[in-house]
Amino acid sequence: MSAAPYRCTVNGQVYYSDRPCAGQTQLQALGPVRTYPQPTPYRPELPKAQDHLKYLSSGCASINEAIRTGPSRGVHRDVMQGLHEEYRQKCSAEDREARTRVRQDQMRAEETQQAQRELSRKEQQQAHIRSDRCDGMRDVIALKRKREAELNAKEIEALRSLERTYNDVCISR
Image (cartoon, rainbow, N blue to C red; front, side, top):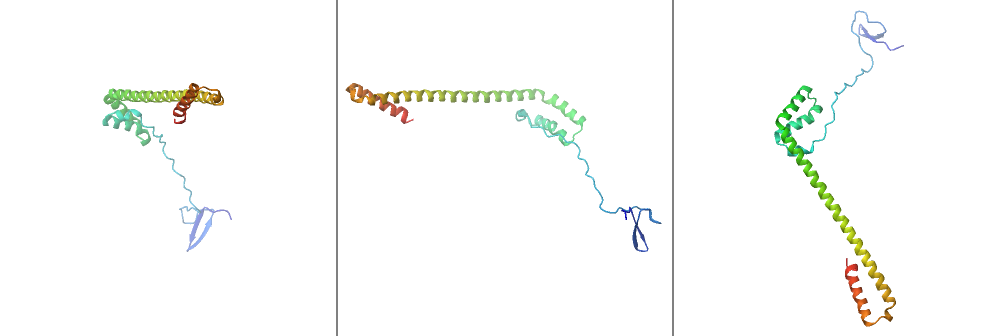
């Protein structure tokens, strides 16, 4: 038997038919009722808050935040246009100053990073020079120790002085 779309009841007895029931005009579904998900309205992603917001007054920051979050909250286009116009009228000078302060902060941060890189480069250069100097002293000490028996008292004293300098500069670093 194929699936019958009509469920009929006569004298308390239920039967199924592929034709409408006698005396009944209401259709009844057989089996589970399908439900279809309702499409969700498009909501654009919330953009990141701008860096200059921290330098704006509370009034201008509120308008800016309303403009930023408006599309994701479903605010209508005419309201958004009104917010933009209000922001231009009330906050344009303050906005320019705030953006200038952000650029100045960024420039200071870049200058600080540059100074740190330069200091690091100079420290590496000094370490390289010190390493070369220590390598040279070590080589001279090794050569003189090989010939120590041939050295006079003054040369031996110079060797001991070089060893002390090597220990102070190269070993204790």
